[in-house]
Every structure is written in C-alpha cells, then in structure tokens.
Length: 73
Image 1: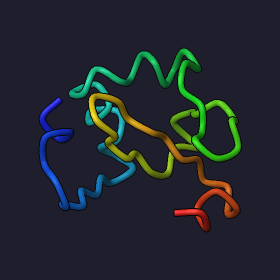
Image 2: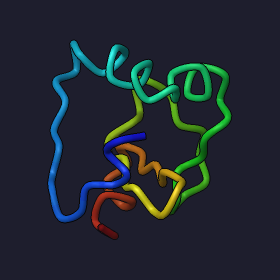
Image 3: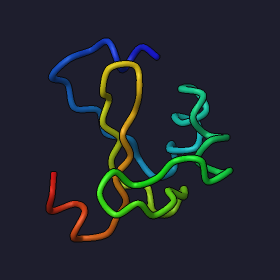
Image 4: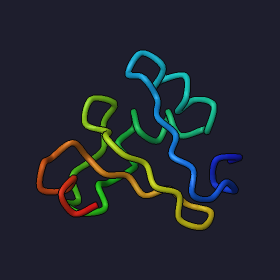
C-alpha cells in the first residue's frame, strides 16, 4: 500500500472514484463485506458511510460519516 508510506500528505478522493481507489488498495472487498469498523463508534464501514481513512503503520483506521466521530479527528 503505497499511500501508507507517504507521511504528512492529505489525499482526497471524489465519491465517484472511491470504489476504484479502494480496489487499488485491496480494501474494497473488506469494506463491502463489512470487515472494517469505525475507529470511534464501532459501526461497520460501508461505501456510503466511509468518510476518512487514516494510515497507521501497516493498517488503516476507518472513520464513518457520523458527526460525533468526525469531531474526534
């Protein structure tokens, strides 16, 4: 995952490009299968609810679109 190696760079993805972006990172299947949870509320991440992805080491933390979760960033 190349984006995990880059530090201090913000990467934005348009909604229309999200599926392709997740596929390029081999994360799409995990999202569609409900394997990822929001870091703050624990709700399952879906394509519709995914708001932020934060690289942490060799993993990715996901944050949903819930206002309370976004305010914790």
